[in-house]
Length: 129
Ligand SMILES: [Zn+2]
Image (cartoon, rainbow, N blue to C red; front, side, top):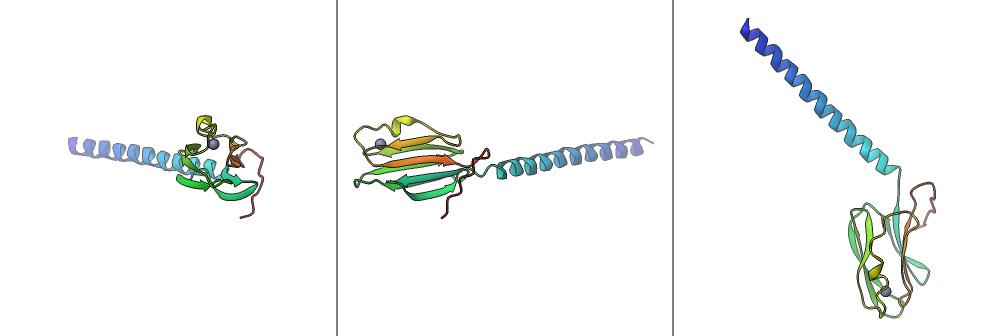
């Protein structure tokens, strides 16, 4: 009798684990699907020319060659974009902090560099690569 009872309990535990694992899988899939619906991109322009355009979800460190021979190091991490380093005189781009929303920009006037987040909530402005 007691053996049967414990077997039943184990079945219950197994079922519970399956439900938890199943819910975790469904949750993960839904999370990915929701992310896929927001194809936000990071676009870097130098003097109006697109030099970099990648998904916001792709972590990277990109060195931008500025208009006057200077540079800006753009960092994309955890869907946030910032300028880590630059040799411009004003450092406005570095002091802009992190941007993460569609339409946000970081501008470096001396280097004519514009870092912009595009896409997302309906404002899909497709950039031809
Ligand atoms: Zn700057």
